[in-house]
Image 1 (cartoon, one colour):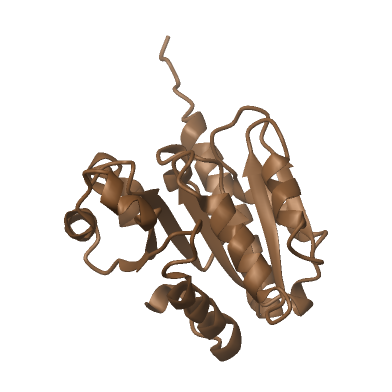
Image 2 (cartoon, rainbow, N blue to C red; image 1 turned 180 degrees about the horizontal axis):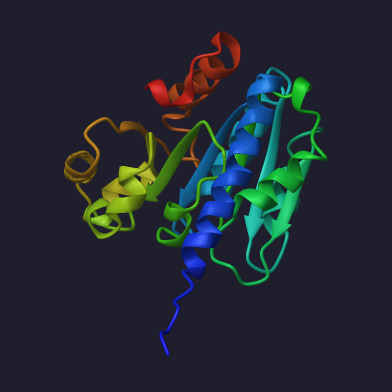
Length: 226
């Protein structure tokens, strides 16, 4: 008897792409720009978002969907900095968010009143690279404590990103890290990658990041256009 192989992964990915298309359509109809923030654990995604919300909450209408494996700790941290909704998605052990989860989270967000939507993905540089969430652009973060070869070790994540944030640059005097080499390695994988060098802890470099976000919200610039 012939054996019939069911490609479960392909079916899951196809279904996810259908949900992602629905997310993208809803965001486009509302005029909302969504950024998918991805990184390994401990790179500073949540602190960067905290600083962003604290600085721009009164100026820009923003909302956040944050994913975590077991807790909503990150969502609770972010909620202290904004009067807007921070929607927590607990994945129950899954190493990434999927588009269905984001689509369901949108039901609780006033999209027409939201110019920027941040999707804080689960801390992982492998799984989230494969899942379209319907975002306008993917922003990958890594820290100076992680090594200059991070983009070469996780090429798909950097290849599918539009922007990169090199964070914790305040630690450069204390760690053997060459930021120029790190950016060069990233551009070997993705020559069009746009970089921001920041310290979410001290505020160094955040003005450029904030200016980028203001441009997206105010001028309607496509997030992936660089």
